[in-house]
Amino acid sequence: MDVSKVNNGELVELYSSCIKELKSRKIIRTKNVLGELGEYIAIDFYNKTSGLPKLQTAPIGTQNVDAISRNGERYSIKSCTTNTTGTFFGLEPLGSTKPDRQAFEYLIICKFDDDFKLSAIYELSWDKFLIHKKWQSRMKAWYVTITNDTINDAKIIYRSWCSFLNVYNLFNH
Image (cartoon, rainbow, N blue to C red; front, side, top):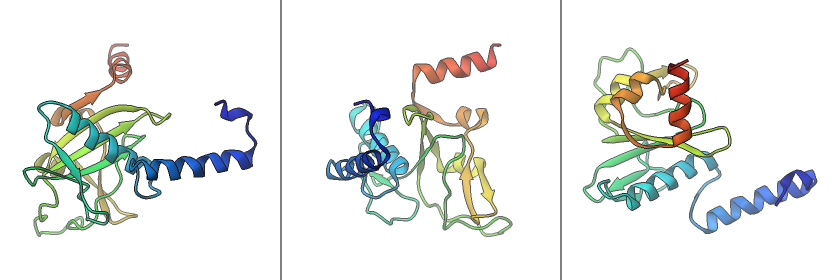
């Protein structure tokens, strides 16, 4: 279907229909399309890939936990189209002397390109998350920036060939 040929009203209707269909297929559960898409893709990828833990969706509203492995390990899943994840609430604020209570065992970052195509899946342990978290003063919460250091500390679960070429061209020209 060539969406450039539909009028504005039809386009909005198509969006609404897509959201309803994504929900009926259990790909998304809320209206947070990018976040839910990343959760669905990450869980599906882990479950279909030999050697990776089998994951199940955590209940909606579980703070900082989006999936749980069969061994009870908790996974936070963040999706982004930029190099900055969404925020993590419920951790100690910047400057606190209290240690953070461990909110999850692993962070999965699903990186999408501007067309919402998956370009990479990275996994950070809790300890690596603590190293790379940054404070977002406006939201009063933590986030992670995807940098070379972050990628070096991450387990690369998936990286598209195009993503690899973009990184290769960046550092070799």
